[in-house]
Length: 89
Image (tube, rainbow, N blue to C red; front, side):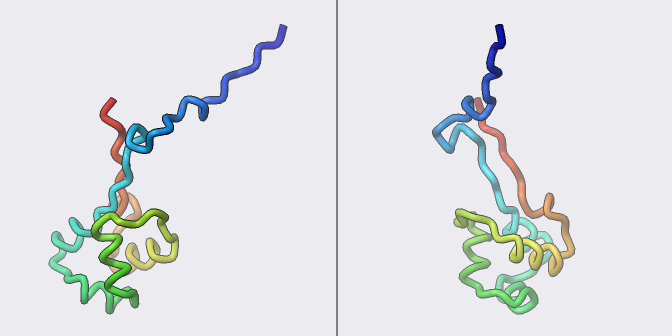
């Protein structure tokens, strides 16, 4: 008899905190390179408010164009900018 495989996505916790976190390391990079938010805003041609949300990890959805701009201007890789932090369980 055929046994249906269990879908691994069904095991995904419903609580977002139990899935881990995505951390945007923009603040760390700016401090390391001694770049102000105003300078980054000018170079990346972005609003400070938008950059502040990325710096403070207050974005709900990542925008690929913004990530491209940040990586280009800051001369970094995407893996330098974004970090996955697994859940503690």
